[in-house]
Amino acid sequence: MWFTLLAVMAGTSLLIVALTVASEAAAAAGTDAGRMAFSFVTFLVLVALLLGIATVFISIREQLGQLSFLHTYLLTVVVGLSFVVVAAPAMLWAILSTAVSSEVWLPVLGTTVLEVGVIALLVALAHWALKSGSVATVTAFTLIAGITLGPILVVATATFAPPITQTTQTYYINWEDGNEPLDPETGYPLNPTCAKAPSTSTALLTDYTGVSAIIATSPLALVSASITPAIGDYVMPGYEDQGFEPQPPMPAIAVPLDLFSSVDVASRSLQIPVSSEPIIDDECAKLAEYGTPYPNNGQADPRDIIAETQSGFVAGAIGQGAFLVVATLILAMIRVRTRKF
Image (cartoon, rainbow, N blue to C red; front, side):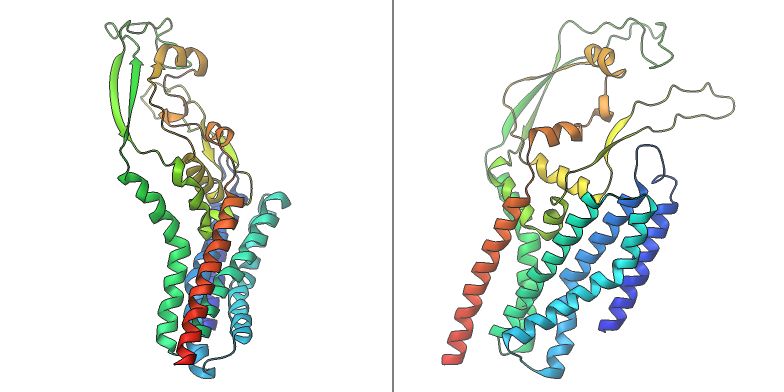
């Protein structure tokens, strides 16, 4: 089973890089195909670690029986590192394809190896503490689910708190009769006017600031937080077809360049408190400043989120350390009780 999983891992990682590097979307202006492919392969490795170490160790225990903690831990680390090693050619291909900076791949690779040690430790503790191999396997997967999905469940508890009412006052552009002269560069009126009275809307939102720090405890979030998110300006090509008047190019959209940045920006967004003060949305002012009343396609600019928040790497590392301490204490007590009685 082990070698089969490694072969699948190696082939899949190479296929991912090939498809990503050859993709027209990944090669568009404002994107980085190599960095994107590297993030895809790294996330594949992390998933393999989360599922593969405990799975492979089932057969190892069946053949060798219950081993000492040191031997168990060393074997689980070897199993985890083997997934990293077989994915190394695909990672190298991705890095060389667009000359991905060492400031990106080195911290990511280092944190990934660190996660090998963390996941291997959880599996080793379960098999060291419990006599039954099947119970140890279930416990190992439970611990892995706890450190991976547990932070998400903790964040979800914030939804039980009373929501905050957020009010938005929007001043829409006036379209008088549809015959206003249009700006050929924007497709909007040359001299726009906005309604004097705003249109008011309300929304009930959850404030996640009280539990935002825990999310980086998840291995996927911690690896993503090990580097600074990268944001690019993606310009969607304008629609052109025979018989139709060419449309003006769409304004650039700020987008994360890879999965690391996407996950980290999403995690950081939890740190931003929900404002109870009214939000003013003036379409005329936005049109004058950005060339469109809907900058960044109406979504929050990832650069603003990064500027207003901080990396969750330290909090995530502390959270993982605390999780390991609690797991070690509980399993150590179980081992003492089962050996005693």
